[in-house]
Image (cartoon, rainbow, N blue to C red):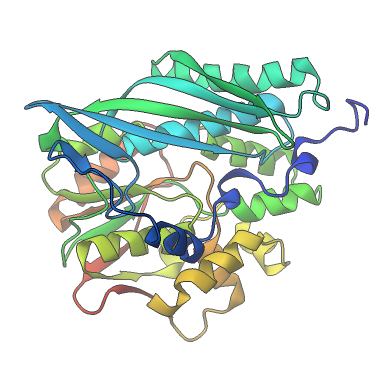
Length: 348
């Protein structure tokens, strides 16, 4: 296979956060794990499927640790590296923490990919880490069948400012910071259907660091925080609902979408992960009459390096929106609210 004809997305069976194991399958896998050591300093572990682990080291500092890696979602190696790094660091921001450093996770088919291509992937990741103000302090490499890249990301947070996916309260408003539709765009990309402007919009979204996280953490009115990635908007909102024992209502018309996301979804350019997501948690979702397959596809669409999802008091909404807008999140939107009732999500 010549370098001219080589496409990174052709070397992998899935791309970006669409590679994630389906929520229902993951639940079954984790259910069989024996209980481990849970010291009191471990403030956040696996109990609520949160974005990162948090370990308190003193009264004012806790270490936040996470890892994320996946196979190519785009063909440009530099862009692939940027997206993967942005996605990995996002989980630090989603806990309200500040990133400290990263370790690179690299698996490459070294007999298939040119060294220059592999180098461009790593270069893209390093560029994002530089933008985040952190070094790549090490890592690990293997020779693998499919290209894989990501990071271990380490951050720090004051335990008093730690934000989790638990804590949402009835009456809270729900705010989403980025547009949805990355999954359907990636499916359209494989069919060569993206125009230059479409691709640029996708890259702009997936490489925008979720830097407002630490600022949101300082607001008492912010009750819960997560980021929307491979399980789609519904999946990650359900994690908030389950961890907080609440019910959420979302207005589909208020969801920010990438410009051609609806068009691509209507044309059937949907990832397999979308269907797996719905099969895993659709029983906890109520869709209003008139919301058909296209709406369901967009609600379950796996987001790669997606936006922060915030649950906050109504009187904090203006401040939250202002923080996002000041940092360039021009599509931030209020998408619904939190209520009482059985755990689940209603979409009107």
